[in-house]
Length: 487
Image 1 (cartoon, rainbow, N blue to C red):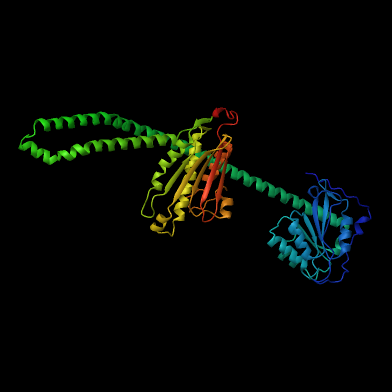
Image 2 (tube, rainbow, N blue to C red):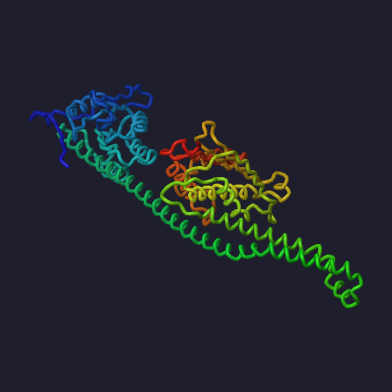
């Protein structure tokens, strides 16, 4: 890249700018000139920022005079002036995008400039700004010692800084600063690209896993359905047969009240009265069990249903219910706690035009996270304490007044979260769970599904000691169909 550096110099100009160190030492209590910023009529964003730090006003004036017409790559200089190390620290803290500093050493103290260098590099962690140390008293800051012990980029004696040498130093500093900024920007771009690649890779893997899981669950549900349908289909005729046989036995008992000792012994052995009473109940239990298995199978199919490229109409209550059935084992009572109460406040809402499989994945993530939060809040509490203040999961669905959006709120009465955790909650790879139990991607993916795939919003409301609520708001219909699906 060519540098468009424009400098107007006479042949005799090179030797006119020599900084003599004839000023007197000043103390910390000396009254200093206020900080100055001079842009020569240019906007700061369109110029290179250069800071002059020296307790001699004439040094500032001479430096500005020497560089008054200087440009580098089409951009002039904006001058920032500080007259002590204390002022320099304040100024660089505000103007972190300063390109280079011409820094005097001896100001309010013999090492004021060196302290500024340590402040910039160690406290502000600014490794980009170029620092050119210039001193009129090299005995107070020997060149070799300063270069070894302080992170500076150049060391100049004021008596050797002619105008041309000052310009040369400025060009070298700006080239170095420009290159570092370019590297920093490229590093940030590469970091973002790597993160985007990792997210895309995870999403592809997750999509493939969900697809494989959906196929597996669908196959299992199908295999369950075949025998359970056979059982359920035969329970009704079996129930009729048993009813007929029991009626026949009753008829025999009426017609032959004295069947004989052998039959009386057999009746006593099988406890005929209990059998007649319990057998219909047994059949009813078998029927209830088969109905429950068929319900679970249907829920598995609903939860794992694949999504096409187009949205379809879906009853989200079915999606929530299928998720709750799959997670039922996690809310059942155990030796550590009673049952987690699940409160369902379902409103009257229409079917949504959406990707059902993806929404079910969101419901699974949010409800499972809520259960995790409740389990975490139980630590250190006894069974009785939990029973007195039971774990509760509340799911609420409502339709907006304009009937264009549906809200799904999933709330737990756990410990809640701090503001710091809440701010990071949707961050990539952020998780509060132990290693091996959380990936830090569930909520990231959930937000992508809600916001990018469905044009909705996923927000969190939480306060320590008061639980957490995750709220989904999504349109009832896609943008292209508008409200026609509501008619």
